[in-house]
Image 1 (cartoon, rainbow, N blue to C red):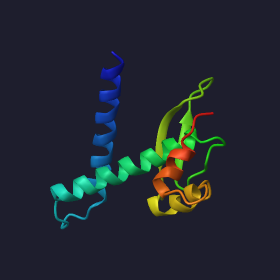
Image 2 (image 1 turned 90 degrees about the vertical axis):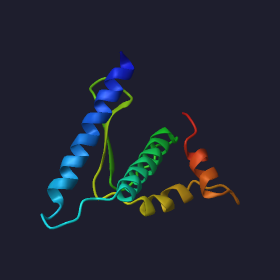
Image 3 (image 1 turned 120 degrees about the horizontal axis):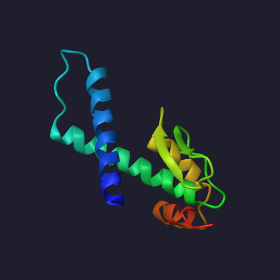
Length: 115
């Protein structure tokens, strides 16, 4: 039953993104190519992974343009939104957690340690 709700929510999110993107395009704009869609999905996925890592970090990291919303009395986020978010702006935030000569990926994993 939980998987159904996750899948239903994911479809609603993708439908909303699709409608928003299509409504923002001028009438003369070309339809996005399959590659355009792949790049957009990869960007959303990468940004979401960073937002989750920032949330799990102790202390939590504040990523510009990402917002987590919580229901009353709950500690896990209910909604994640991005507004004016840029994955490139997240690098300095994660690099500040970097220890010694570790790679960016290692610093991301370091930032994702549980409380």
